[in-house]
Length: 136
Image (cartoon, rainbow, N blue to C red; front, side, top):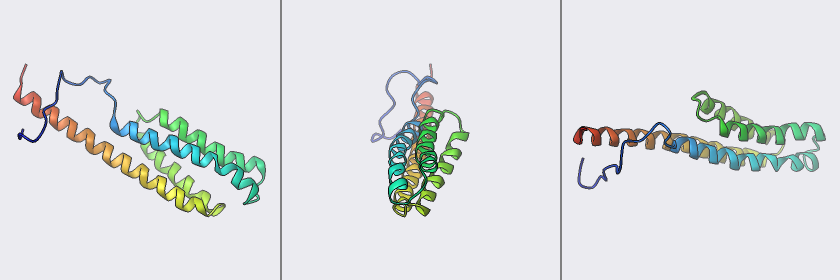
């Protein structure tokens, strides 16, 4: 490794190490859950959506975001996350501001997924280089 790259400290990571990708994506989903839940009163008062349907849309999507945040250990959950992003954007057909907010959350989701994968890849490369230099 070069002098500017810090070597990993301590023992090799365990399988229980926290995933930066999972953490960042879960944070986006939790914040998104708050936003889509708060669309429920807007759907009722401004968009004149019936209460039952508004609760199903707003609270239902919020609960789905929270449940998915807990399921991000599974690889398939990231694809479902993209489906939820489409759902958040689709609320824009009822509340036009959700086109903007849903788009922002989709961008945040994509960046969290991309950067999380990059961090995990670089971490694995650093550990591989460390193990090559320091065989036990």
